[in-house]
Length: 239
Image (tube, rainbow, N blue to C red; front, side):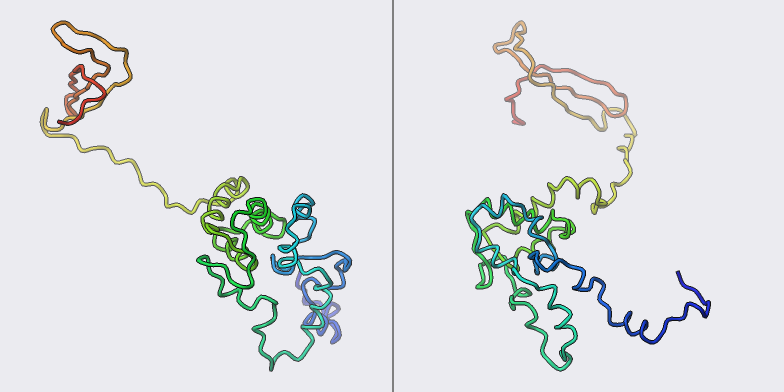
């Protein structure tokens, strides 16, 4: 709440502290717990699941989770004289912005055929508490920072579209459906007709007919609603 009361004027030290304070200072984190530095910089190993840790994908964990005290070093790096330095190499993955879905790059783990690892990573980069249930594009971008497999774009698309939480809570991006427009009424009878079929009926034999029938062709007039019913076969063609 804002106040103009002079008693609530901040001191010089408080103003300086607010100007330099991080939203989440490193001191509040438990430094004994490894954190993920590239899945929104803060996805815990607990969210990754113990079943995944035992699935034999240690190389992927090494690529995704930098076990250590990364959050403790954020403050030190932010206080360093980095204004005159090139900050393009702040992360260990210098080619993240150049990730491609066409081939595997050196900084990516090749996971083609490893369905268990693919499923685990899709869940981490989309369903975890800090992944935010991103859409297809952002979820794909997170995955391409560390791994690649054939068909990754289509797999991410299907995974996001099948997410129950996203389908129930996110607003629809499709265009609004237009109003129903009825067919114009013809000016005279038999000017426009419709043809429909009633199929999958039991075989019926009619007198003076050489073959049985299993369908009925319905011819209707749009203006007078007159209808005529003719026996036919489901296998009949326009010829």
